[in-house]
Length: 288
Image (cartoon, rainbow, N blue to C red; front, side, top):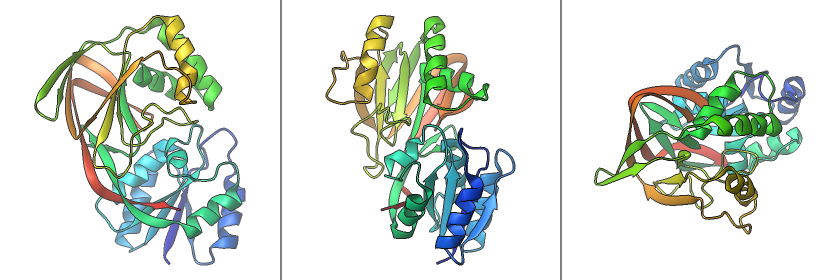
C-alpha cells in the first residue's frame, strides 16, 4: 500500500506533530510523511501524490487543510484519510475518527476502507463538509483573524458577532425551479452533519445520498437563540423550531453586492451570487 501522510504542524491548539510522526513510522513501515509549510501547500502535495500513484493520502490537520487536499483528489482513485488534528474536527468526527489518541487514529487509518462519497462545490471551489452564508460565515471570518483556537474562543467570537449581526436578504433558486426569499441568520449547505465539536446543524445529512441538506436558521430573539444552542449538541432537547431543512442538488443564491461565505470553515467572499451544487460519488474517503 502506497500511503502519503500530510501533516499540518500548525493545526489546532495542542499540536503533536512530532509524536504523530513517530507513531506513523512505527505503524506504517513504508509510508511517506510530509509537512505543510504554508496555506495551499496541502493541495499541491495531494496533487503530486495522485501523479505518483499513491493509493491513499492521509491528512492530519483541521478542516481547512483537509479541504485543500480533498480538492486535489476529486475524481481520482486516490482515497483521502483523516487524522483529527484541528480545533473542531468536523469531518473527522463525521467519519468516526478517534480523537485525542494518535495510536487509535493510526489504527483507524490502517483498518479503514475507501468509500465513494459526495462533495459540494461553491463558486468553483469544493467543500467536503459544510458551506454557508450569514452569521456562521461572519464568525468564520472573525475567527480566522485571531490566533487562539478551540471551541470556547469560537463561541466567544460567535456571541460578539451575533450582537451586531444584520441578516442579509437573499434570493434562493433551489434545483432551478423553486424561488425562495429569505432573511436568514444562517443559510447552510451541508454534505456532512456538523460544523465540528459535535455541533450538528444538519443531523440527517449524509455523505453518500447524492444531495445537500439546505438548512435555514430563522431570525429570532437572542434569548431564544441562546436557549436553542444545546439542541444542536443533544437531539433530544427542544430546538424551538428555529431551523427548516430541505434537500437539494443545486442552488443559486443571490445577495446584492459583496457578501461573505465559508467552505469547511474557511472564509470566502463573493459578489452578488453564490452557485452551489453537489457532485455525487466524487471522492473516496477512508472510513472504518
